[in-house]
Structure formats: structure tokens, C-alpha cells
Image (cartoon, rainbow, N blue to C red):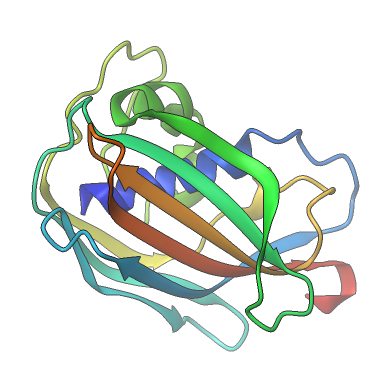
Length: 191
């Protein structure tokens, strides 16, 4: 659970580290699907799913079970890929979050971008100015109709199908968990 939460936070951090939008063109982030690859001993995301909230909105709903505490020995990196034709053939995009300790991620990026999921989750809240938040605690985290706030997406991000891969590594730089979030960026009249 915590790995997913950490990965999701890393995803948000990557998109949030881009410059703020300056155009008035509205942008919407539409979730498509969520996958967990490996890491069953760290997190269980089998109860998380993307569902249709209403006619036009998709939401993340379910429970994330973090099976162990993630301390500073775990590192996270985030890679973003874009499918130009929307056919699931992805090319890595230059946007990424460099590999760093999960504890550093929580106090450096997560604290600034936790607004994206608002009050729709029981993920830990980290107060601004916190110097240390470690380990990321094991436990059950609920997501109830979580629709990400798209205000952090810069205008340079092209519309279309995207995949964010959140990779959790152990001290030997071995991938222990990978979370993939597939989403569509919709701009302007296509909304």
C-alpha cells in the first residue's frame, strides 16, 4: 500500500515539478487504468480500480494495503511515457523524477502536491516544513472516488494517452515494485 502511495506521490511530483500553466485552455486528467507489477510482499493494490464515477468522470476507488513500512533504504523513481497515437505503444518522455529515498520524496515533493487527491484518500498528510517523515507506515489506505486535480499540468504537455511508471527499488537497486498509472490528458474542446 505504502509503495503505491509513494509511487503515486512520485508521479504527482514529476508532473507538479513542471512550470505552472499560463494558458487559459482547460486541461483535464482522465484516469484510464492502474496496474501493479510485482511487489506483492510490499503492497497489495488488487482492490484498487479505476471506475466510471459519472458519464464523463473516472475515479480511483478502493483500498491500498501497505504490507510493510518503507524506510529510507527504499528508493523511488518515476518515468513518464507518451503514446502518440493512443495505441499503447509508449515512448519515454524526458519528464521524470530522479531516483531518491522515499523519505526525501515525502518531505520534498509529496508535501507540495498532496492537494491533487484532496480529501478523497486516507494517505498520510505531511505538514509543510516537516523535516522528516519516515518510515512510510504500513497499513490500509482508502481511495474514495479520487479524481486528480489537473491544475498542475503545464500547457506544454500534449493531449493524449500517458503512462506513469512508479518504480520502487531496494538497497541493491533491484526493482521490488512497479506501479503503472494510465491516464489521458484532454485539452480544450475535447473535454
